[in-house]
Amino acid sequence: GDSVTQMEGPVTLSEEAFLTINCTYTATGYPSLFWYVQYPGEGLQLLLKATKADDKGSNKGFEATYRKETTSFHLEKGSVQVSDSAVYFCALVQVVSSAAGNKLTFGGGTRVLVKP
Amino acid sequence: DAGVTQSPTHLIKTRGQQVTLRCSPISGHKSVSWYQQVLGQGPQFIFQYYEKEERGRGNFPDRFSARQFPNYSSELNVNALLLGDSALYLCASSSQGTGQPQHFGDGTRLSIL
Image (cartoon, rainbow over all chains, first blue to last red; front, side, top):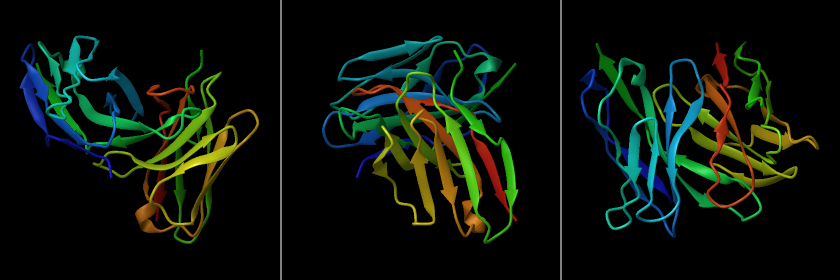
């Protein structure tokens, strides 16, 4: 079945440091890929997405490129802030049917802590 | 516009009891999915509903059931609660279409004593 593997955390950084969170996936076909972020006590917020190979998703300074040849979707940010402290989840979706939403398969999450 | 709303926010039950969790999707979204997130792990898919029909089911026992109503809201029911059912239960809604992102509510924190 489909699966997503993320680097284990926690990742501890200083403000303005460069952040990379590795994500690789196993899936049949051509899934869409997502990064979600979860702040303490909250649900998941969509951070960015990519729907086909070589697409680059970006939002709030975060970027990730859909690399089909390496089955990867690594998340990067050039200069992190304390407010970026959260848990980040990589996820993929396979179409269940064209008339419905889709089942998300998540990685285990990576906790990021940014210190002032 | 209101996002996905879930109720209640927190719930405490004892083993063997039954619980019902509720979810209202974003206006215009016809698909609702339920996920279980155990502390320290990623969410696990439980159910997906679209137009009141079950369109997907994860690897959960029959104690878990759900339904979707004509207004597209949804309920998740869990019977004969076990300690291992303690988790954050997340509801997500999406519009139809391939690769459409799912929008999550803040979840219901269920604690089993």
